[in-house]
Image (tube, rainbow, N blue to C red; front, side, top):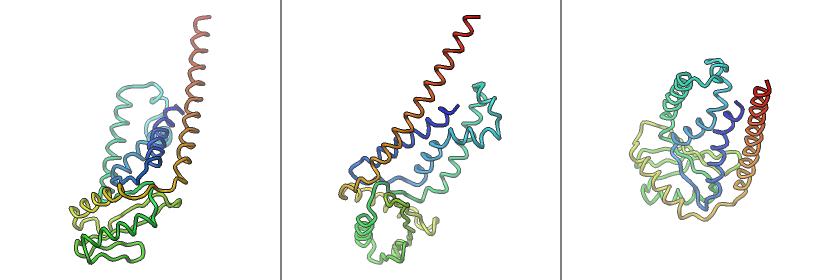
Length: 212
């Protein structure tokens, strides 16, 4: 069961490692970003809160209906929550000091009334306002609309413009790239060790059965 918890997380870490190995920043829609994280945590949620809903021995029985109910319920919850983030977008593997001035210049060409106010970028002519927050390590930027109901079509257009802009930016510094690779490799070794251990226990069980 430990391998079940770690395999989705390993896939998510591998995905992040690929993003940070790219030569340009990557823009993801907030809904997609949340969905990837949620499915990366699927195994941990299954062995954590999931076993409070469905006992762990029921999961261990590999009942098709049980797994179908749990996966379907999890998918429905993830879909509902992801829709709350559909107007956000995230930029991975970027330098704040490079990306934001370039994006501000681009926004000024589209809307001359664009202004910065602290961490808020306001495009007054398009009635768009974004709160821009970076992660602790400075390699990821989150753009959150201050008014999610205003001018959705313009936000989609600006996200597309930002995606095109990221393709032209210089390669970000790789201070995080190898960190994610090492973390992914370490988790992969742990998963491999767990699978080898479980396989050895299974083989031993069969040997004891045939001896009897």
